[in-house]
View 1: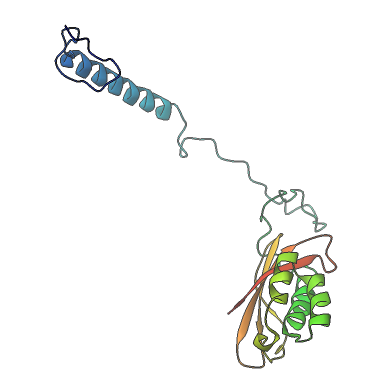
View 2: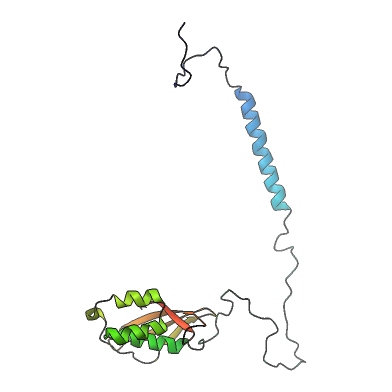
Length: 187
């Protein structure tokens, strides 16, 4: 009698094979599914809903006490919690200097000026620009603040050609003006 090779995909009838007990498998799958659904409903049902949770404590000013202008609640670190702060100190100057450097066609003065007010990657990218592609324009007026937060700012600068550019900055306490330009785009 020839011996079957156990390393092949011989799926023919075999006396050692038994049929799968399908009713038992279906019962097992059903019980597992019901257990998962029940566990999920118990987990979500044990959490307090936002309506039933205790209200968060809110700070209120006492009108009888004089205000010294300082906040008792510090801003959280590592977030943009200070949205709407106005023009962040140094950001307008950094934008103005960046726009002047960006429009400077002289590679020698342009690179030094860009290194002062732009991140290294942007400086490198802008220095690869063909001088013939640098707009022959001057800034028209002061840059206008579009958005600002504790860690980022966005200005729009009108140019003498009638076009505008948007300048994006990030806070950098070690930078000369405490802000560095990360990108520039046509507005």
